[in-house]
Figure: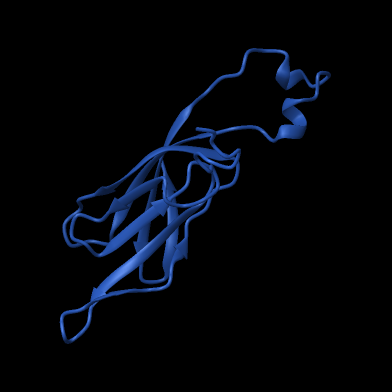
Length: 125
């Protein structure tokens, strides 16, 4: 059996990681590279689940290792994403650049996107 060359993981397409707020108020769907979408969930008067339009929580030049929903009671929904940044390809392939003379380092940074009434804000620590 021969696989098509397009089969496999797509780094830029959301769906690799799916995390839900423990109270079920929001769902984060993220890709391996850069893109994250958050859907706010509600119930209508008949009890049917409704999903709002997605909100973007994208960060450029990042690779995501995992995302989870954090239980913070009845405060605004908050998610955690374990990410690392990478340099732009132009500077990484430049042999004369002093940044490429040393060994590459990988630093994983926890990111905490949280939902507020005015939209998304990214908190890092």
